[in-house]
Length: 343
Image 1 (cartoon, rainbow, N blue to C red):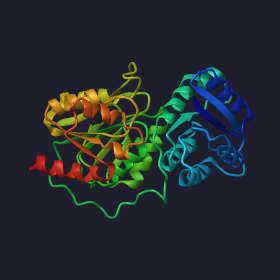
Image 2: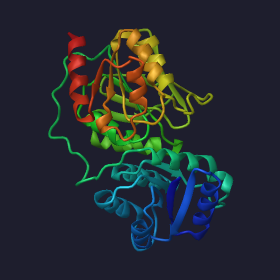
Image 3: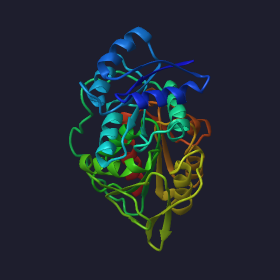
């Protein structure tokens, strides 16, 4: 059973979370804590496998507690965050600090139904993740990467899920400002993708924004698929553009990496480069195989650096990945492949 500790200053939320999680026979709620200080002692005494963590709490905020936890006693953590713009930005800080995933808190009227399936799935997913000690702050680029020579007709497509916000950040920070037009799907709730794009725009040499329907894909620009929408690449004359649309879940996700990668295979073919990063499940693996079969170069993250070796593992098993590399080496390989194809 998955031993779970609930950390939230709201007694109502603690009660609801316990009700939701206790209904699943695979989860055992071992306790609940109203603040990080109580949680710290309960973690030592109860040895949970997973914790759920509120962000705004008295005495110590959730981000500070999470950073301390990941330095000294890393545990898979599911963060519950408000859906405000500030909450979205804080949620990204939590993921950078080591949280496995972030869930949106419901509105003022909390119900079991609002949290149910997503919370249970998140706790089960967290229990299967590999968390490592986090030492120091986020990785800082040592200097601007060397500019590429030719990128006009090339497309870079990236897909990720659990642990992907940090992985994507690291890959993009290693790429120069004139990198090819880049399209990205990161599994994330709708309210968080705008904040994610804004964060990347501050950190990376390329321009990053949340995609809108019929945005043109040009060198030096990164388009992030909006949460709750699928994003596809299309060709219009000499230009590439994206189509952002609603539709059913694919592989349990919207946006889906498979939807993006399949469209890239069809529209860009051998002019594309695909990268699949850490994530639960297999979304994107079949789409990457289609890219591979269409002549695109493909890279999968190695198990050694994945938070969850799911999506890259399936891509490797299908024979979709030309190169299998740990995260710190992916940016350099992307540049090497782009230069070779440019020539």
